[in-house]
Image 1 (cartoon, rainbow, N blue to C red):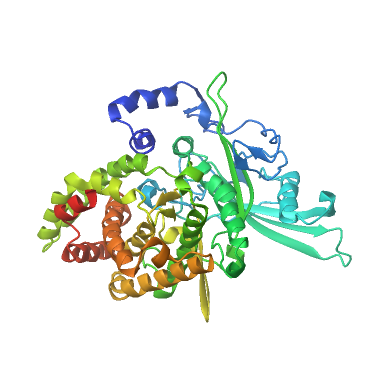
Image 2: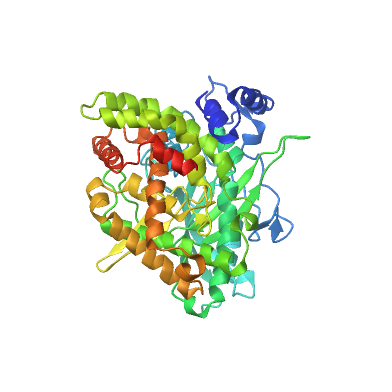
Length: 530
């Protein structure tokens, strides 16, 4: 029932009464018993959400449905049930449930995951085959003239995320050891990667495929990233510009059909596993350090600069070039549903705290305007409209820290959007940075972002100030408005903060600061709408 309501409100974005018939039809028209359910329990799932019963056929060529596909061997993408007599992916959310990454906006739907990290032997329990690994390795070693020169020696598979991450993907971590025939000394090589699959849970699977989160991320890696790389290579001065994301080794997508026979959707994305390279996640409850925040801001500035320069140099809107980007008009209704759900919870929390009456009154005054504010601030605004992550918070970041450096890699591009750069910055600083750090260093962090953005664009042949008429002062003005959007999106996931003393305190300080800065008022909402 939760996912049924959740899908109606968030994915479809229609009137609830009209959507009820739609969802009932989709969820009830095609059903089948869940494979592997307990003997004394039965359940039904939409056929369009079932795992495939046999391996899908390989694609006919390098392109299918507009995607750049790596030639792949036949692979069964079903997720196993047991490893060494221990339930790894049990039904019902018991110990050992699969580990999944999560989206900030949908974090209230998360379920706690176990610490299980048991490994499996090659091919004994997991649906990763030697043939399939050969296809991935062939793409990794494109320079080899003969695919037969690669021999897989061994591989292991295990859950791919840390405990507590959930919702949008099931993730496996694979480590493979192999050798190349050209290595005369018998040397061996190793490669670690992450496999992102559609969720095992049928209703999570339905939610993800209806909203096309999986397709959007696949197209980001197979269309946007290659275009940015090619564009970067055409500029001589861009050799030191990097895309701070994991490499993509393989991608496959099939939407599935309902007629004449229901066919399940298929989605597989294979990415570089950066954890063995020293990258680690941050603790959201403590928040990012200044060093980590600086690295994150500079990383997103690289993506922003590349996409902005590509747009300017080619003279074409990125929303036209990439029509699959998360549509802000549709997203506005979805986010508004979340805000309407979160505001009563936040109000009840604030009512129990003394001295916050003015903050609560300001939020109540703002409430009738939230939909207009969200729609206005999500919409791209020229000349600075560019590729944004739109889910830019610390759980979608990993950091490699050494004595004299800190590198950031940005994960989970399911919500990639054509929007305003300050929306990414504001969500990061509002959601993931401790209050004292945010108070002391916001201007410095914006300076660092601006310096990195403008310097990178100049290397790519674009001068933001002279060509686009945009300067550091306008960045501050846009950031101020984006803070209001970030706050509203955080309110939609207020469950994440409530019940955690550190995060509750961070939320209270944030509300007090934004109120003191005059951001929680209907007049600002009206100006943003105008």
